[in-house]
Length: 200
Image (cartoon, rainbow, N blue to C red):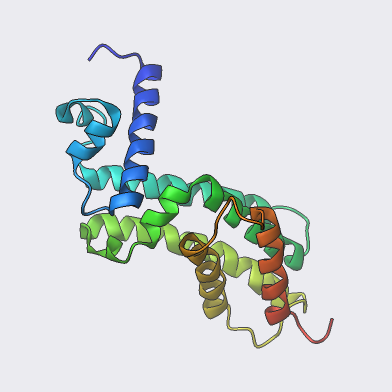
């Protein structure tokens, strides 16, 4: 193919978009490379110029999303805000990314995601744990600052917060009466009531 790097990157992004859409609609395992090629009006063989396999495509999709979330929450951690403010901002940012990448969230939430190649699953799991550790740092700082309860189970709380946010893929309507930023505010209020120290 006689593509410039810019054209190749643009076509790669098109493949990402089409794959994310089909993975969300049909499920990862039910989607064939031929389906992705048909969505783009390409020959199936053309896809292998950009990706070696469907698993590589899935890994790049999920890695890209998690890395974006890691960058966002890392930026919040680096600010001078209080732990309470950081937690509120992290919830807002997580849900904002949900709205922008709903297709990828749908893939991430599929129960059978763990049935893919072990190496792929391990790489995704490593990034997920890195992301969870950033949330744990916020909660730990809140406990140390006496903003959050001293007996807070940080690991359980992180998983509960992210499960609550991620589960919106099953019911949230972006065209409904509650905008995503308002949903983030509601979630933050609920979560803060559960973690805030009585000393405040």
